[in-house]
Image (cartoon, rainbow, N blue to C red; front, side, top):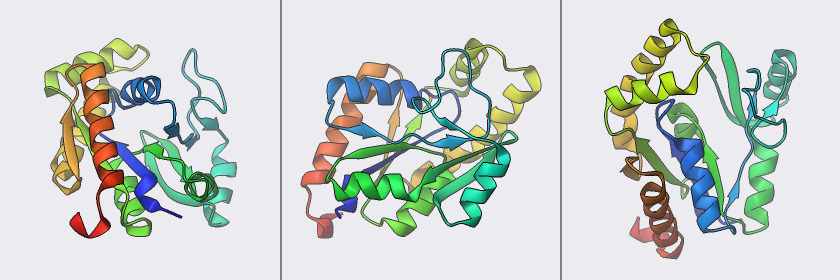
Length: 192
């Protein structure tokens, strides 16, 4: 199992992680996207098993208790996490897989998969991040303020990632991510 096939993308809520991942997969369909578990309700247009595995809080906590979660966190009142089994299946198949998770999850993944590549997507500015959060709709002012406070903390942790990429343009950001992934997979483990 080659853990250099495991890529983590983190960044503040609203910085475009999922959009960039969709573009990465359009540009290179050999890269898989892991589907995380969450206890939050689906947003308009989201589908269970496609965007997330939407589960009850009780089911999520049972998964944690049974050791099924590689990483998990509570964010804005909801749980989010990654199944160990799904990641191991990708890696055993030799498939490059991307996880879109928060910085705490990234730290946990690096602990269990030390050769994983951690990419941090940075918004062009906090003002732009705020605009993107508002543009999502359905988020009240208090939630936006809370997400911006969390974003500032996450940005401080970006220095612990292998590479920080500013998401000014989705396609450009996706191409930078693909270049980093390709270089990472080709590099000798001792050179990192």
